[in-house]
Length: 311
Ligand SMILES: Cc1cc2nc3c(=O)[nH]c(=O)nc-3n(C[C@H](O)[C@H](O)[C@H](O)COP(=O)(O)OP(=O)(O)OC[C@H]3O[C@@H](n4cnc5c(N)ncnc54)[C@H](O)[C@@H]3O)c2cc1C
Image (cartoon, rainbow, N blue to C red; front, side, top):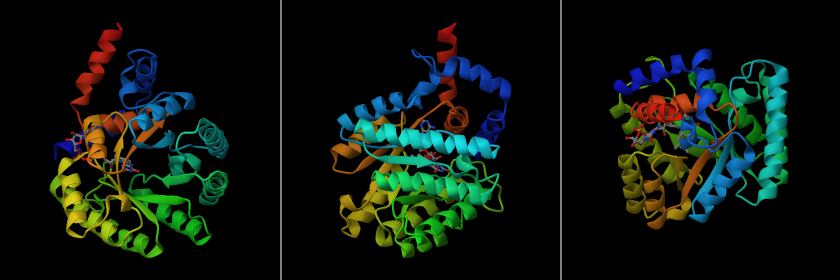
């Protein structure tokens, strides 16, 4: 309940232009910028540097060039070209070739066909350079269309892509079966957005119970699923189910966000599990940052300390 209120509050704040410009002034300062705990930097070079440090700890990475909800075709085209540049730089750097992106970044809210064309440009470039491209899942108005676009690309032979399912949505169990039948790689998350009652579970207990059910579907019948959570109870349930079914830890991976539960990331790695860290970067970091605050209001204290220490 508290988490639902907090998500709603922070999603309203995320639309505030004044707050955004204030945060932009302080958040990403080279030293002590409070947003740097969750975001690797504004430039791809900073993300690559963060990825190298993570890989030195023998964890894996996926890099997310932040951006969402572009408003014009020109912006969608610019975002796509920027992403192609990022692909080149990652390829040249030698860090793992694995990226995450959002379809509204490529124009989904403006025109589906344009978005599909833009996605195809990225998948083609990615395929040529052996990248894996994860299509993040956004809020519920985009669930069906995101899965449809993914499935269209899959049918066209793009196998270097995967999707995300959110356990807060009751529909996700059927979607997991559908993705398993396809042979597609799924990342399972709880869901970062404030969703209405008619499409989403509202209580943590329901979201967690669904997470466990979908995790079992994916581990038993899926294709190298990613279990993306910092929740130790979800991780324990995954490990227990894998042990019970004798599923080798090489057949799935855990994923966590940059800057969150680094202790747990390294502990799991040490215990023999595959762990991937999601490394976001780019100038459009504000909505992502606000979602991280909404998940854990205690983070506000940490942000306020950052702002006050700047003065
Ligand atoms: C790799 C990855 C990719 C993701 N991709 C998507 C996506 O495509 N679409 C989408 O909707 N959501 C995505 N998410 C976000 C996800 O939906 C959740 O909002 C987020 O992971 C928090 O849920 P949790 O599973 O960690 O569990 P929770 O029950 O929310 O948290 C469990 C514990 O984790 C820690 N924790 C969680 N969040 C924070 C935080 N912000 N700051 C500090 N500590 C925290 C706390 O210790 C907390 O007690 C992604 C998450 C990960 C890890």
